[in-house]
Length: 301
Image (cartoon, rainbow, N blue to C red):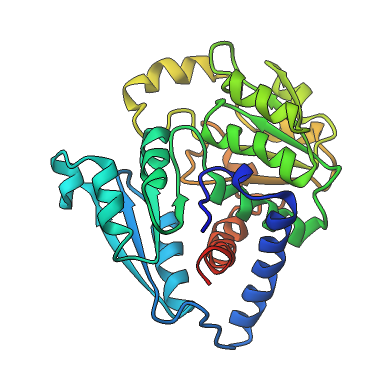
């Protein structure tokens, strides 16, 4: 029984297996071939944070794999009334075959997993977003082949996505250049731990330097869910960190642009970049479905 709390909960070989399976599963879906290895299984989905892509991709994915997904907003369960996380984990894991959690505190998912009898998947916490990285690497490799040895530029907040790109350098072998304004760098403990495992990560405060010769440029919103009160402060801090044409010109001529969405055009990314020829954000969004189906198959089948 395995959990998927961060990307480092699976080996590099297992991560590669999941992406290979995602390609096969996606092709089977396009060809109209049924693939239902999770028939009779049920996935519980506990969400504290609003969601579009995460909820739809897990629900549709579980249905296409022959199983059933049960959406549980914390406000509609006893968790929202103060039931201990440990008790909820003990109860729900006796009824479900797998559990997906999208929440704020990373420790909530860790505590839940520690008392669960079934696999627990982190569908986003304030610390990491590992499911998104599976989809992003899968998308890059669909367009450009293996990401190993390539250069990824992360520009913006040192947030959960930046942390997951850091961990991804361990799993997939790419070089990562991160550019963040002062005070918004990634968690240094997480970075140090990833470097000990082989992550190749460079930190700077210069977006143009980070993007130089990159094969992929990616970013995220300046204020994530729960940070709305900081919006104006963050807009000032990140004013020079928009991914625009000038940033993309520093990258390789065939560099791709990604954003995990939702995006704010002409804030973290210029409209002509996210809607331009180098952007693969719509493929990236769709591939959440295929990558997570492969992950579900790996954990539950």
